[in-house]
Image (cartoon, rainbow, N blue to C red; front, side):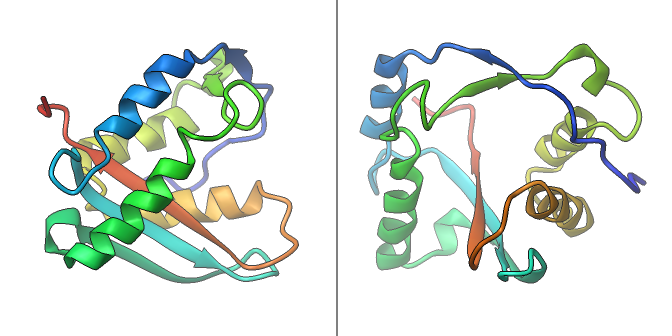
Length: 146
């Protein structure tokens, strides 16, 4: 069981290829998307998780899929290397109780382990300078998508 995840370290950045981001958005349609699950949390102005959600993307109605695809598209349309940055994990982020270990475990369970997701939400909320309510969205992508 992961009890605490160390997230306070210096991130290294890589440059993001804008064409890669645009290619992602071309796949974000109702018929071409590769999303398997969507999970997330609602966080209050004090940085406390108020509620969570976790659902298979295919079980959403067409209007809910469209709304969530629009949310997902805002990320690739952000300014590359300004608002949207690729972060590399520093070497000290490896090992027991690391954020890298937590993310690998979440990926392996396909977002289906609520305890791991709750730890991630708490870590993200703790590391974010809160001024208002916000929501955390996590989209699980199927890797077999063509």
